Length: 293
Image 1 (tube, one colour):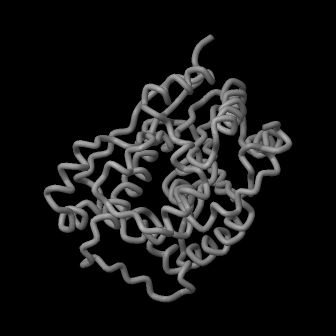
Image 2 (tube, rainbow, N blue to C red):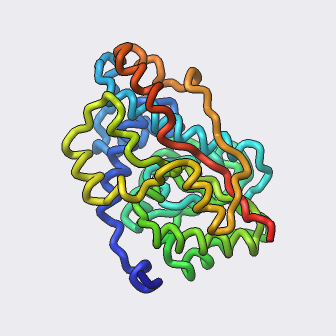
């Protein structure tokens, strides 16, 4: 697949998953997730049902909450002030970051998502939200190298951090390689890190004693999710090493500190819990840096 085809590939069918994801995150303490869920349901009151005993549902909530905080964990010990997030969906990590510190945060996704997100932020800010940093929301196809470089040029001089959560599973091997090449060039030029929460393993989901609904199965099939995952963490590390990266740090969030874990534990059976533990990790979040030549 050449660069022209990569640039024109239509990713718009992915965006509905961003809406579904924020409704799940609305059950957690993730910043602005509850407010965003309310905005997504047309200003109706979003009332999470914490009584429901649906193990699959709560397992997904725990997973996505853990994934969110894993990125924050790998950002917290960095002093870099220039951060760009790829395909951020309806995550408001950028807004929370500029609320807390004097960072320059660029939030990117498909044009339709960015336009809606700008409206949401306007409504959230009407609640007298005070920010310390600078937040930009810019549409970007991250496989378009020219546009990617142009947006990164918005930053002042200095190192950058590139963040993604929920992107690589939509890219085939060739597209992953293209993205890696773009990011490698940027980090080689500017210095900094790539924090990715998208180190997922194949054939792990089916081993869990959890029932996935048909809508989710169809979505996975339509986007070749399973085929786009890694066979092992070793294979993933080898892939990134071949593309010029090495692992700088691996996230390790304490599950006991997640706001949703107690609801999961109330719904899971002992058999399911043992199966989940036996299956092991299905995902990891890594902080990567360019390997020394």
